[in-house]
Length: 235
Image 1 (cartoon, rainbow, N blue to C red):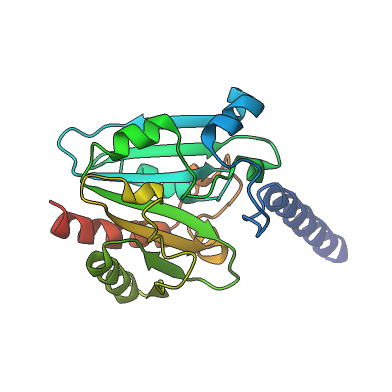
Image 2: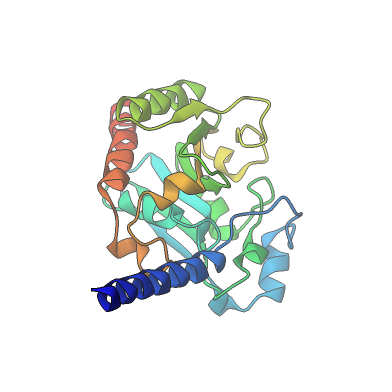
């Protein structure tokens, strides 16, 4: 029995160590200035194999679901965006490095990747997913479409999630005219800033390569709450 317990403890220790290594390779955005102030500077200095730009068009979609910080930049947002592939147009800029993906982070007010700029202007509304450091489950809902942002908050709360309207004074509110989210036909956007703790709860394994295979019921409850509002308001 003692040997069995020791083996169990050893296995658990190995699993926890592996998870720690995985997570340490995907740190959250820091408060340090971005490495690059625009996309052209990033493209000149980074290997194209270290990031991916993707756009999937849904004919007739008024809405573009997007994130400029996908992949391993802000973990979990790519999976959220891709959930909407069948119903709306989607765009992703994703970090693919084995480490140091924060060098690929360009803040939304400076993000000027050409395909993103082109496609956003072709849609009436933009819904953007982001991640922020946070040890408690929470979502800050911002963007210029304050009416629908409030509806998203209520929809998430109804399903048991912690959510709040981002203060207009907050740097996470997404209200700047320079924000890539606000370059659509109407200028109306919804920006969801999701805490690390909440994003981790969307997956059984938060490691980049395993996330798409390990979505939890919490993930589906979250995205369905958002989808319900979009279907009602942006149809």
